[in-house]
Image (cartoon, rainbow, N blue to C red; front, top):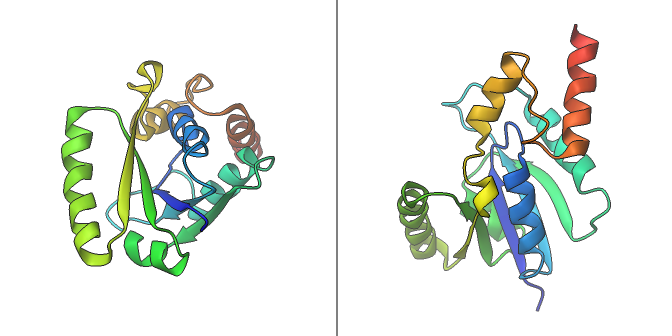
Length: 161
């Protein structure tokens, strides 16, 4: 039986921490679907189609990773994709408490298990909100975004200038 995990998030933008979780997750799962969601309460810097495009480019060489957008509940999307696991990265104790509550409700709803990977120490301070702020203000975010994605972001920003 194939072990399929969903790695959900808004990924605005996808960071080196996200990439690290996916690459480490490939040691545990046969396939990872990066599920790019849309949260109506968030204002996005990149469109959902841009985010999907960026992440697909990053994992173009990895056939066990796919990238899809979704709008329904994560557990519903996981069921549609025959995934038995939701993969999540944990940076802090606050992340754990938040993710634990969601994981328990998801498990009650669907029997889908959540698997938590702790971020590596060097990625702990990296989060999309901070990186997005750096980008919005024209700063150099290259240390925090995978190289392929950063190149695409710079190309996109140069076209807009």
